[in-house]
Length: 326
Image 1 (tube, rainbow, N blue to C red):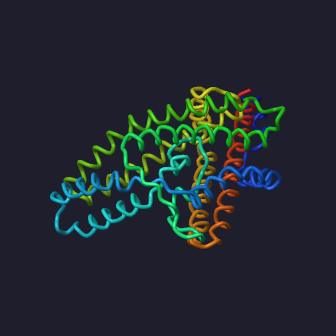
Image 2: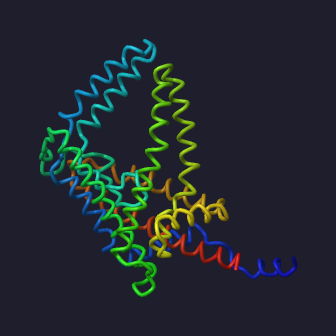
Image 3: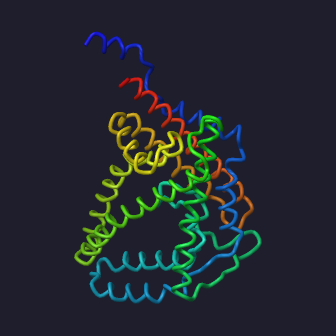
């Protein structure tokens, strides 16, 4: 017992949140080329053509809302119409190319501000619209763009992790990094389907009974999802920092969070708050202004900083845990 106490006294404190963020900032500042992939994706979605599925899907959405409208009480009709208008606007502006982005759905990918704001205007005028009129073409494009986004994300994560570990110390090559990225994303997709489909059915059931009750259930599910996401936040990191496969990386993330939850939970919360708050700042310039380019550059820089900081934190925390249990 005395020996264990002496060992704990000689150990350094666990990695700090601010130190990791500072290290990530220094890494990206010294290797500014790391921001080119998220910046390039934003420029493609901003200045490039927009693949629209509005004409293909809007009739089905209108039919669904017309059917749902019959079950909505008169007191909730205004909110129902607002939700219908928001969804119709999102569908009208949606760009199928945004499926290349991480969009907060998958553990590995390239973040894009344009994928969130869906700009339809740029300083050159309205984006060129390419209408996808065939369901099978739209489905084929989706099945091609999403895995391509995983591949690009694997390369991006490997570049950022390699800039921290150094080329000689990086434990995973680009090809294996891409393969494990795709496997992890497929596992994540299967998990989202297994959990998400029943949840949507439950929300739909409560929506039919009472929209107010559905909002309460949705809020509870959002809290539950954050509690679930925190242990899985570092699922990609074992692949790129420790050279693990996708399955071991998931287990490593859960194990690390289990032993370091207060500190690691604070790091995850800090990343989410910084990302969300800064996105509000970067999206302030309208898409029709060249100032949006400043926002895209700032977004690319800071998201890469946060990614680099997470790799630094994961590496230091796993090293600290080895010393603790060694």
